[in-house]
Length: 82
Image 1 (cartoon, rainbow, N blue to C red):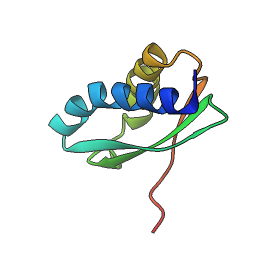
Image 2: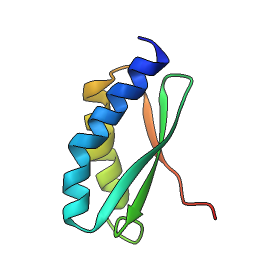
Image 3: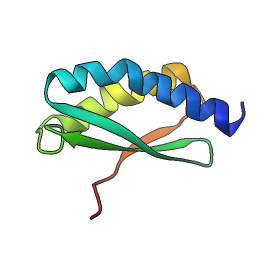
């Protein structure tokens, strides 16, 4: 799978997840895909201060991304840098 195909599949996964996050006032953005196996995302809005955001990241986001792009080994949440 090419890096472009991987990016497209990860974006599809995020599109599936986004409505659930937005319904709670949050959102998610893809930051990067490193070495074709590690995805960096940024949780936004209400997700930033949410006490369950790490659980959401692992159980929801990572599971969905792996469904679309099985070669992904990990999903990492990065904080907004101003």
